[in-house]
Length: 68
Image (cartoon, rainbow, N blue to C red; front, side, top):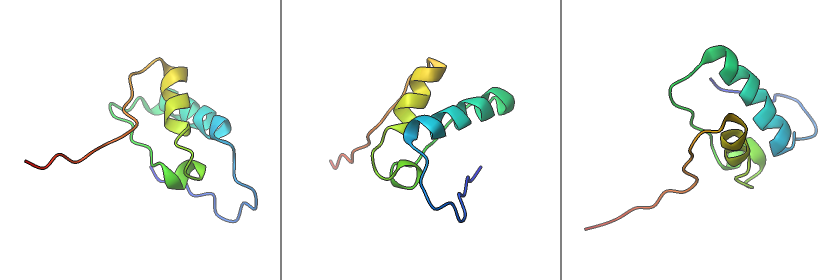
């Protein structure tokens, strides 16, 4: 699902976005939830962490590349 705010002049805070996704996830019951860092909450990386906490789910909030 792609959530587009369209012409909204003010960005929603990460807590509000997490609450919206929490309700949506309750309806859709996805097996995997992926959230972007920049597009979703102005690069604060908080929405995913707040959502995982609200749903009592594990989370990964960084990735790295390992070159061998």
